[in-house]
Length: 158
Length: 114
Length: 100
Image (cartoon, rainbow over all chains, first blue to last red):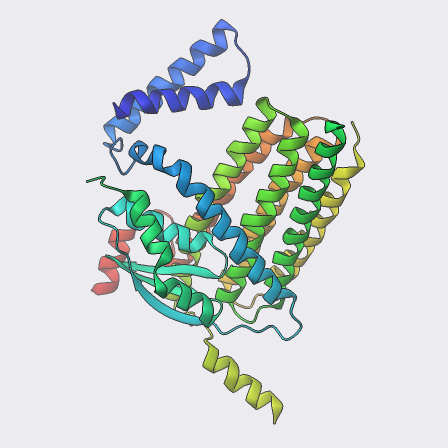
């Protein structure tokens, strides 16, 4: 199943980048997709970690939420940058990821990094070391709203 | 309603705000006191600056191959920038570059005040 | 299709690139310079994309996408080089050497 979806995604990617529909170029595209899927198969990378298609449906609601979080925190970081006093209070903290799978922890860590104002600097199992620009940002993260949201996004994927 | 005008206005708004955040991120990268705080400033550029500029260009291009390519570029930033930021932070910590924390900055300010 | 609306982002990107260059020159650590280089790369990609629109040749987007991939790989290569002193070593080998 994952193979079929990977073939579909790669084919779509080729068509979008190419935009030509001549026989020669299409056959080159098919060849490329086949080689890419075979190589990925040999690396045993087509699993729920390498091609996490099980998250696609829930991503429809998760991504807008994440983008809105990014906009909010980018705005607050911009205000800090433009403030003449530069009111920063850099903080190191550790949060525990509540997700069950590796993919979930990965999504959580990357969501933290993607939101301006917080960066994941280290991962030990499920302990994430966070550097935050302000103490408020660190406190927000420790409150765990994002953790809960990512856990919901991860869902029952075992 | 003249939809072309509305679209142009929204495109202008997106491009202007994108440019604004692009420059703000770069200004932050110069103003911030240490590596880790500079990373936060750079991520403003890489998320909101890039995102708004790409959105403006998508609106200008309309539905088609160009929008698809802009979308792919946006997805590339979306997935790659946190990974390289994390790699940078981890490498810096590993090479024992210590982040300046709030109390260090307070101490420095107190020393500067004397 | 020389639309003046794209001149604003062009100038914004050039200013951002200039500020990133000053950061790259100022340092002080090598990681600040890597961060600045990454930022210059981001600016260059967006510059290519916007310039494509400004000149009415959006084909430049393809170059932008390629440059984006190179930017990521380049950052990793430089970081790995400064961390392990070589590009050929795997992370696991280096960790064992440090333990020994």
